[in-house]
Length: 226
Image 1 (cartoon, one colour):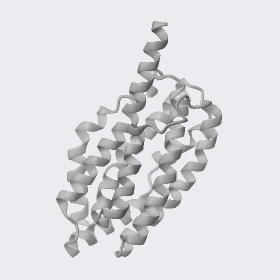
Image 2 (tube, rainbow, N blue to C red):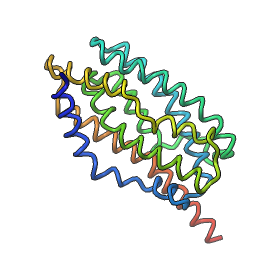
Image 3 (cartoon, rainbow, N blue to C red):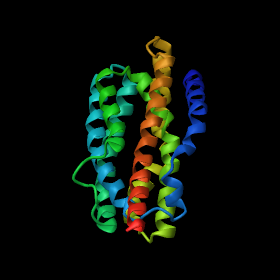
Image 4 (tube, one colour):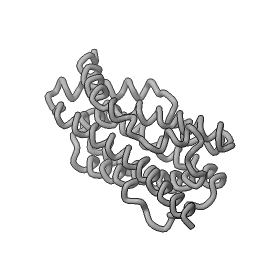
């Protein structure tokens, strides 16, 4: 039974839900109001993130001494590698990133935290923090993919990265619930830590999107003032 795990996730997601709408970039993309150049920036930053998260999830799997947590992280790692390969089509369709030379700190805070947790986090609490944010990220990806097709003329190959993360994967949910429940049953999972991880994941996720929203809004203002 995973009733305790489901209850914990429901509590965390209810706590996070009011801030999910703080994403300032995705609504612009969904409405076709974002600069097209933003997709090149997303591709560049996501390439860096998937490379980092691939290593971090392998490290988490190696550290985990509970089989469900180990399998959960082990399933996430190849997904990052697969998703990274999908970015080639987006790069080709979107063109060069005007800020490619220097990683954007606001975009790379998320993978930096994942890497920190790979060394310091208790496995079941980390699973809870990661999985609690999956629904919001999947929703963002669905909205981005829809906006890309409707307003920007991107084809399926260019949208594949977002389609990939928008898809529901019941097996990952099953493993997450079992890993969290094992943490609860063993007494290893600290509920406060699980909530903290989830809140920080949400904050860094929003920082990614809003860093790009602010950058391209500033760039557009500068161009209009010339």
